[in-house]
Image (cartoon, rainbow, N blue to C red; front, side, top):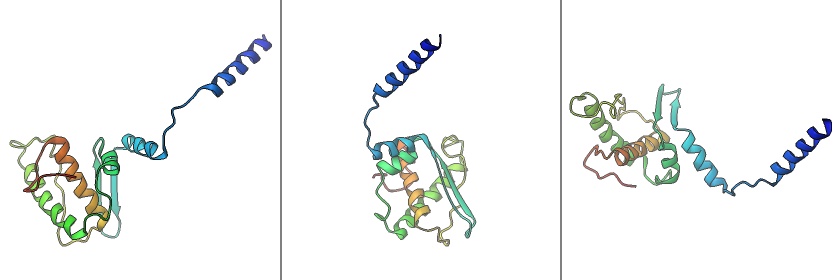
Length: 145
């Protein structure tokens, strides 16, 4: 009986050693892990703000499709974000006209506060992602990458 157990263990070890995994690059693995994690959280304790974006596929899209950080100036991002937030908040308060499942929560974005580049970059890209994914238009600009 003991010999049978040893033979089975050796057989399992040999089988596991010979099994092959598909070869993937580190970048592919990182992008795949982003698909799994669909929450983006940005917080700054000094300014007492927090943005949480829970959107399936947004992390992957941000890493694979969006323009890289530094592509846009912070003033450009702030200007667009302010315009998008105004339209977004208008839609939140009109659930009889706009889908309340898309526009659930109001966004408190104030133009006089410096939220920093990272927050503006991710918020802007979320608006672009949202418009492309749900075929919405939040302003006079055609959403594009």
